[in-house]
Length: 478
Image (cartoon, rainbow, N blue to C red):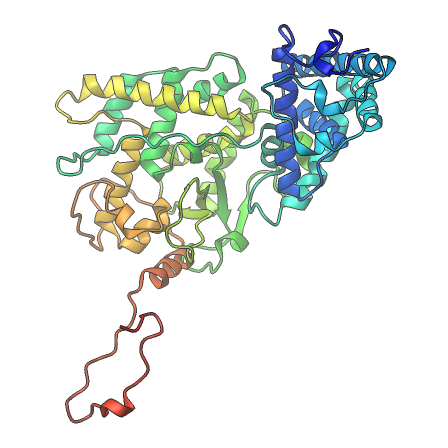
């Protein structure tokens, strides 16, 4: 009889050679389950792993889901066989020992019993994909209902994808263009750049995301123009929305209450998940563009952007959502922003989002080298954001510029565009700019307002040293 588990060749411990890839897939599934349970404040268990598979069945393609299921079933059978072999040899093993060396085992797996693991293995073997999709939609609707108070203006499909795929790593910030030799980008410069980029058209570029091979030239023209118009970050392009105001921008007190969302996949309407999961097609996009022309005449459009800022230097400013009122925008520019707001409908993975942004920036960079050989810096998506903020800083107050760009620090705002830019009250020629949310501007003004300093008193009015006032609460005594 073996006294040590490593001496038994039938146990999966030690050095698994051919099963390492399968173990990594199972470990990834357990990690996603832990992230979802932490977000929902639930206790992690094997039943939650089954629910995670249900959710992933809705958003993951058939090949990836089949690979995960096959790995889980294979490893579950091996673990049960190893447990039976250990019992025959008079040994007691925990379910955590089924994992090979070098893979971190969660604490809740070590505390689980073999009866719970056996039930998990039985469910893994019996479940099938059609039933998993039905249960996955129900689970997404329930979880989205629990999270709607924490994620404002986020659709059920977006929340479901976040629960299925988890959070992705933060990417390094792109290189800033030079401020001392900053060269603005006018609309004429933008048109020449996009003409050099080429492409089959914005609609064709958008529909190419339904395939495995996208059209980077068409997408670069679409996203580049959208960033030049709105100043969005690269991550924000995949989560923005286009809304419509019932009243004019000057009469509305709260944009989120006065606005009508043009989509059906809102957080409050969880039953429309099956409609929200439908990817855009040519007929739906053309119908949306037709209705867009009618709405632009009777209502005021506004762009709602979910800020992707990683650091907030002013906690008093809540910039999770920022709003740009698109009053007076050209119809062609409005169509561009509407097409960009369709990007979230494709439910792209974080890796493909990064790939699309990188491909578009590379296309713009190569085209700018040909069109503008005299520029000190190449034009990318981030450079176009600098161009937008530079125009806003020259036409509006710093508070309005921060509300439109999503900044909470005046020092950070001054790093964009031209150095020592002076703000004016008149807009630049040949440059349309959106309007900011008055409530956001007021909140930024209050946060940036300097502390009121006491005025110096005359010599006759100064109190005696024995009756000197108490020190300022924010300052320490010497």
